[in-house]
Image 1: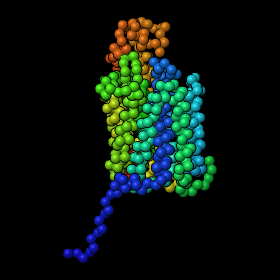
Image 2: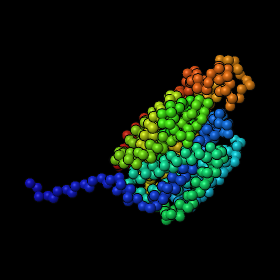
Image 3: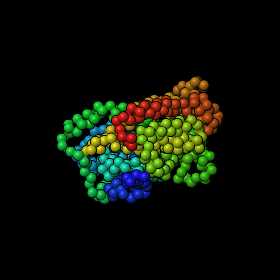
Length: 487
């Protein structure tokens, strides 16, 4: 028998609650700031597709779906393109100062959106809001990264994502109440909510970026572009662009699709839902689309911290691979049918994929980021969103205008089947179709669904998502030789 001392047993992995208990005060205050910001943002974001382009929204702007796509494309380029550079400036000039400036800009954006109804003035309001959001995110996320360690980052990002979605979950009921008063009140209310973050800035000590802070504007820009020349980072950004192209359709296109096509009256009847959850339509009382989309935030709030803990020991790129696949299938399922039940099931499936992929993307970039460049790398996390969301918005506007917009399809049916090619406005198309056919709104909607099969518009977006999953599989094999096994 050997006299050598037995090797000390490895300590058991630290539990979820033990990790959370060790998070410092600044971590929690920053998370609550993000929650307030997201509450205001999603209070607008989940209803603005209806306000901008829904033909039968009486007080809406009544822009076309193509114009909506153009607004969202520009919004995406500003909101997710600017952080590619503003992340480096947050590292250089300080996180708190950056956050304070962003709050003021966001308030100005909401106020412009409340007061402008013409295309370009309203678009300017959207872009001011996008610019404020673009400056806000790197400051918050760079601060958060300074409170994390490699051991707790998975749970920390999961917690961050949960509180983001608490804000996202509360946004739709706030919006539902406010647009019941008036559409401008939605924007005024969100201005007040985001202003609360000025007070939150007083609740924690400033967190300074690590590493050297030498150099001015041009030095920061040079470092930003230099890092983009790294093949591993560049390929990851390009692959994830496909994921974000698919992902953002849940928020940009599905709201209009639900209002146009999905019949959720059975859900209202089954649960005897009160008016705060419902909306009156020509097809009957439906579950409001913002509450259907809210199933996404609800499931994430319940599960994301636990899911993040479960996959903490999985390679980050493997979790991303699984998440992209599940989210793509969920998006396709949500738009495959007119059934409200099946649409929500698809949204829940999409949400599982989101939990597996989106927090892990930030986690992955945070782990591979050099010291002193944490906010810069969080800025890079916005680059695939910029590419995917911008092109997806442009593409989505074109596709939905042609294949999915019910008013446009009603005009098409009148032209093709009844030779009525003039004298009918888009806002009146469904009423005219019902009068010509002598049917109700529900039957006219089913006729258009069977004739033009609008569900097919989801195929290209789900296909791009699945192609991204295949690409990340090969990426994971390629970078294995450069990374530690636990990255």
